[in-house]
Amino acid sequence: MDYPFISVVIPTYGREEPLRDTLKDVLKQNYPNFEVLVVDQTPEHQPETQAYLNELSAAGKIQFYQVTWASLPGARNYAIRRAKGDVILFLDDDVQLEPEFLNSHARNYVDRPEIGALAGRVFDRMKLADSGGNLKIEDLPPEAMDPGIAWYYIDLVHTVKPQRVLTVRGCNMSFRRELFTKHGLTFDERFRGSAVREESDFCLRIRQTGYQIWYDPEASLIHLGEETGGCHDISTRSLKYQLTFYHNHFLMGLKNLTPWQQVRLFARLFDCHVLGHPPCYKSGSPIKILSRGGFYTLGFFNAIGTLLQSAWNDGQTYSHLDQ
Image (cartoon, rainbow, N blue to C red; front, side):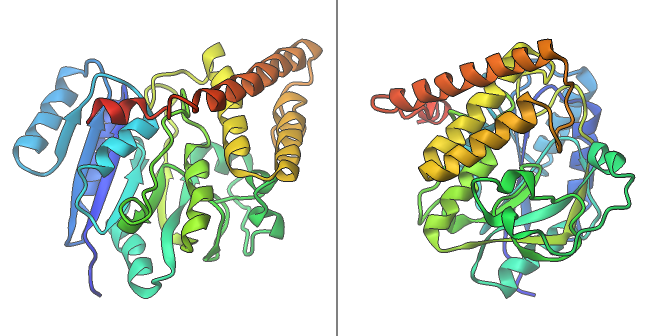
């Protein structure tokens, strides 16, 4: 195989032992042609973690960058500007990999020139537990390619057959360099907090390039889904998370979808995340529904405000700081 050079990018925030273990798995890859870039947004690490990162950096095993801000899309863009790879692969900072992982990503780009992005399978501990670990999907339903409702049908946890998909998962995704250089795509830094839907937004814009997004279940990893730390600076239990969650969904829809697709997306968002119907299975308590409805409404108007500000501010705050 003609091994493309792969840039492995790991944005991190507030992670200690899981980050160290992730890096150990990456450095054990039997792939011959790759580099590792760590973009660290952590204000202060435990001494053991900082010493380990400094050791790897000094030995030339990783490129280690420390920044003074916290933004997942901002960290991705920061790494892209420094990456040398033909393929740029993004991982979360709490994953477990088998030694063949990079080979599984790389062979898709060698064999299939029409593929511009690869989605790998994610053995997500929480989602596998919910299904008992027994669910297996061959072909995703047609709805999974419909941008208005796809987000409720795309399952990259239980799907076992390679196929074309609409989006990737941020903890296990790779892209041809041409998407960033030739086509000028960047991650939108207006996606806030946990940056939910930032990768979906990016993938919807790939449609304009002519490249396909492909899913390969053999390019798999285990996502630990740690409760603390992560690629961002916000707790999933906070009120700020709730507001940014809805803001990001509305921003993705308003940017990329037709009016009819927007209506369908926003209706499903309300039905699932506000009313709590499947597949969300949230509490049906009237107080909680009203609370979620309030964040839903605030998130919508917040996203409108974000788009209006685009007339004088493109929102790429962290990229501008890097110029």
